[in-house]
Structure formats: C-alpha cells, structure tokens
View 1 (cartoon, rainbow, N blue to C red):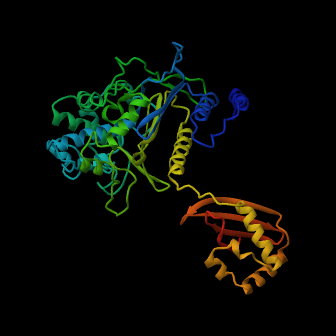
View 2 (cartoon, rainbow, N blue to C red):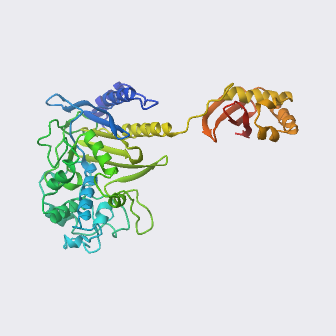
Length: 469
C-alpha cells in the first residue's frame, strides 16, 4: 500500500475544525448556527433547510454555494434535484387517476404493458410498494456507462422488467426504481399526456409550487449544480443521468419550502380523498405476514409514539430528505448539492430535536408545589424517620395511615445505618394525577437508593417509597 498518496487527505482531516454541538432545544438561532457550522466543518458545497411548525414555515435558509464555477450563493428558493422524493408525487398521480375511475391500483400490469414478466400477477400496488420483484436498474450510487446514454421507457422496461424476477411478487420488499418508471408510463397511457405535464398540471401548479419543475430545471430562477467527489477529493461537477433514466422514479426539482407546502397539502386532504390517502400511507403486509415499513412512495416510521412520513433521495450530485409529522403539521426538509457528504446525521438530529420540542409542549405542566424542593423534601422526611419522629401534618391522609409508627421505626434504623448520602440527585419531575412526581437518587457508600416522591400543590407528601438500585 502506498501511504503517501493519502497524506494530503489525512492532513485535511486532522486540520478540520471541530464539529459543532447539537443545540439542546429547537431554538431557531441556535439551529441556524449549528447548520452553518456543519456546512463549514463537513464540507458541503451547498445546503438548503426548511422547517414547518403547525402548518407554517418558520425557518428557511440556504448555506454555501449553488454553483462553484459561477461563484453563486445558495438561496432560500434555490431548487435542487430531489431524486426519489419524486416517488410520492408519482404515487399521488396514480391515486388521482384512480379517483377518476380511470384505473385501479390493483390493476395488473398486463392491462397496460402485457409483454412484461409476470405482468398478469403484478399490480400497480406492488409497484408502488416495491414488492413487484422487478430488478432495480439503478442500484449503484454513481452514473455508469449505461446511464450516460439516453434511453426510452420501452427500452428500459424491456431490459429490466422483461427478464427474471428477483422474487415472487408480494413476498418481499426490495427497492426498485424500475417499478416507478413503469408507473410513470402507466400514467402517460391512461392520461394521454406526458407524465411531466400531468404532474405539473395536477399537483405543482395547483399547490403553487413555483420553484418546482419535472424533468428539467429550465425556467427556475435559482438552480443548484450537483457536485461529487471521489475518496474525499475536491468537489467536481457531477455528470447527470442521461434522458430517460430517472423520470417518474426521481426526476423532480424543488425548493425546500415547496416540499413542505406539498407535505402539508398531502396530509391535510388537499391532494387526495381520505380513502386514497389512507392507502397511500399504509405499510404493505407481505405474503409472509411481515409488515414492510414502506407504503406508496413513503417510508412510514414510528418515533416515540408518533407516525412520521419520510423519504430520502439521491441522483447524481444531489441528496435530499423530506420528513414530516402529520398530526403536528410539522416537518423538516434538507436538500444538498453535495452527494459525497452525508446529511443523515444532521437531518436526523434536527428532526429528533424538533419532535422532542413538539412533544415537550404537549406534556402536562408539572404542578407548582408549596414549600421546599423534591431533594429537600426527601432528605427532610428521611431525617425525621431516622430520629423516630415524623411531622404528620406534612403528609397526605392515606400516606400518613400507611406510614405507621412501626414502619417509621424499622425504616429509620435501616436508613440510619446507611449513613449520610454522598450524593443526592433529582432525576426529573412530571405530572400525574394532579401531583408533582419526582425521582430522587441517593448515593450512599454502601449502595444507591431511588426515592419516588409524590406531592400535591399544598406541599403535602402523598407518597415517598424507596427502591434499591
């Protein structure tokens, strides 16, 4: 191995500034500073981030450059190629035609493309769910020689949906762009217009997605150039896929705020009828009985009890991520024209921070309790028990009955034997039954005790129980 060829790379990594810490709360100023630090530290060429809270875009900002060669900055309305985020739009087009009675999602592929493999056994639903068994024509993460030459939809489908299946239809989930090219062709056959025209007329224009286009970025006011790099080298302009290779599987251009407008419209009933939306967002049950985490153009995730709709995308020079929490009408979109720098941690950390903030605001407030704090209340009652005399005016009626003189005497002896705690820590408080509930950890030389304290707003102790840790 020639170590010298890696020397500049190693030096660059050692000289990189420290990665900024994630903010402790979803404060937009702190979030802005965090993203800016990430862009500088990780080496993004350009990045665009938009945040929606309760149906309103509260943050949209771009960082870095949309074009290195022309020295143009990324702007808040810059459009990026969003890759496979396109797939949810493709599925919506299929559902719109189904609502018009022009097709059914359970139609066999044979109704539209009779010469494809197992066309009578594979349905449109299978294509949308990635359960068809058709091999993926684009499993790699670079533009290979095939994709440097334009291809027609018929030629692509003959090659990749006309041979052997990867598995029995409906038995497995396996991501396949081939199925979405096929869906785009079906939309064209049924609607009698190009997929791009149908998409723009039925979705992009009605939803006023003014910084979005399908197939080409021509006419958009601010467009990002995609960049790539090999083995951590300098960014270089990425060669795009030739015509015909991505289309309904990944041919959309959009700005970050446009995608949030789409998310809100889709999840609030402005795009599809309720029954269509339900099917579009329901994960597929495979023939084995296993449930996939993928529905129709959307991955369905559960985070801390919340259902999250999400999808990532990647085409030559670009990566994207669209993550939305329907019940809170909130989400984050992250778009980048730097395919060689991962956005996974950044977007994941930011969404979890947003989710934590939303859920924290929904938690019932902890009642304000008169008198001393939880730590002092626990230590005070322990002291009284070790001395053998408890002030029962500080106790709730039921706890006072429970805490008999016999219990006080026996507990006092055991607690006194532990000595003074070396450390006392309040691990957190929350509301339950109108009371303040606190967990207090007492660390003794001989062991650790967890105290569970319940108090009503008048300051009376309704429960103080002890557990060995």
